[in-house]
Picture 1 (cartoon, rainbow, N blue to C red):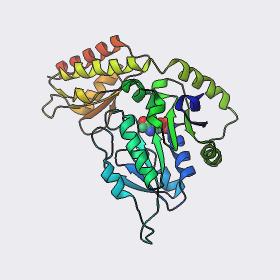
Picture 2 (cartoon, rainbow, N blue to C red):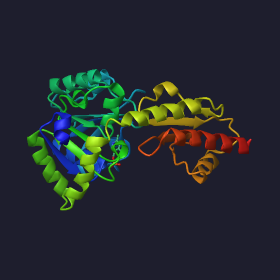
Picture 3 (cartoon, protein in one colour):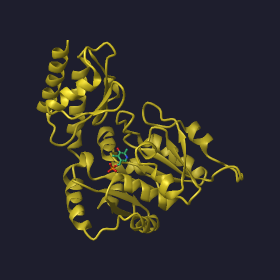
Picture 4 (cartoon, rainbow, N blue to C red):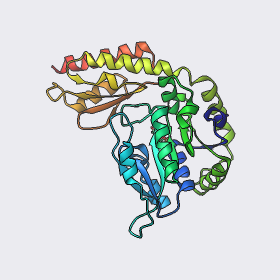
Length: 306
Ligand SMILES: *Cc1c(COP(=O)(O)O)cnc(C)c1O
């Protein structure tokens, strides 16, 4: 079902998005190969260095732009084009859609296709970390197939916005999935209990995709509310899906850690991701009233501190 939705030959169920990316990279690359990744990508920053620790795969990090893309010229210049004894052979290019650290930015089909063209030109594999790819499809109002067209593999999460309690999927060609299945076994991800997880995954795929638009509206509503609070700084324009980041202004009357503590005490759970920076994510079960309650909680905390 997942493969058909992606327009790919086969799919493979794994426990987590991290396992999906790891298994994909292990199936694409040999030890000593190089994979091009964004310097703000989840694969590079938040997956315990699994590609190198377990796969012996060397990461070549190139800068992510604010919109989650990587400049084509940066990718092209990172590719090792000749057989030079000093260089690790480039094997793979990875993109992330939507881009977690870049405000949940969706990458467009047009951009993705130009990267695919580059991969083709140099005979490289192309993997998309699409943990939230359905958020991108909904935000851009396009069929998800267009966002993964030409990619050799994509991973996406049944959990997160799609709301399943657990599970991620890898999709790709039959030949690729055959190799990925062995790698999944190798990392301990082959499960006798897969049907229980898959059952929830079917509900996620059938019922939870279209409603992601609500999460995006709620994120926008929260961002606009935050933008009206003088002690908080946010770039509302960048909020296109269900993730937003904001900063506590340097002259705010409260310490960032106390601000977080105050929110937690009022039942609002957000992540602190920098000295003064916070991340909020909207999802199933958070409705517009919760957004108002969150904004009220923020205003109360700041009023009490001033
Ligand atoms: C969450 C996430 C993952 C990893 O998923 P887990 O299920 O938490 O392991 C990978 N990539 C991106 C972009 C993510 O946001």
